Length: 292
Image 1 (cartoon, rainbow, N blue to C red):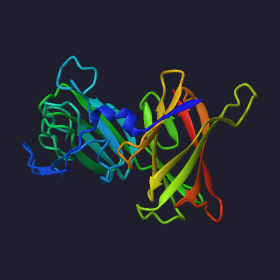
Image 2: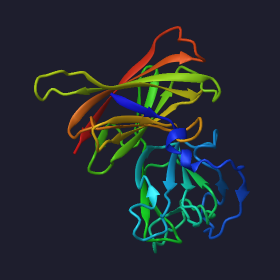
Image 3: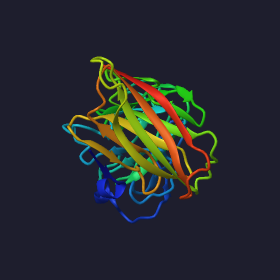
């Protein structure tokens, strides 16, 4: 049993019908890769070139805030474009690579000052593997990290890249983003593609069921690969939500069935292209191991 939520429900409070504009920014090291922030909303922006959203949460400027960036630690495959949104209305912030007081501050990316207006955002594409810390120059007591993996597994019909590779270590990563990319279907960023994702837990520890389906759902993209994040759930209920933006971005599966020292099978199938079933079956299976 699981519930499905869309971005309109989860981000409804963040909807502001405003135009997307480019603005000047403040502190920019000369080596920064990107020097502009933009205005928009996760719910209202439909076609920005980003796969994943991170929020600067309301109250982030306060030292006692539990979080500054949320999620504070993410694991993504190379090629992922992350968009940070300033949802701390009335407070300017930055998204700046490096740790506070380090010599390499801003050498990978720097947003400049993201204005204190509704949902300004900054985006960056991660093309190299490794762990990249970042922080807010204005509020340096809050920092976060993006872990980037080069791991990719190719099947007959899909390539699956992952923020953690084929082994998801809960001691390091609470969540991992998958990118499920068709190898035989053209991606024109227009034609709807429906993906059915089934997750099975393979548990031989008690000699029981070796292929117990724990999740199945269908996701639709606009002629794009499917970014799908797996999140280790802390409650008893499985939820599926997304996409991060109005019609693009990552979907998320948060489930209590992700447990330590387990083996899973992820089955990916394209069930329709432009609302029509494919002429031949397009399906692959991939293995994922979790450890704790």
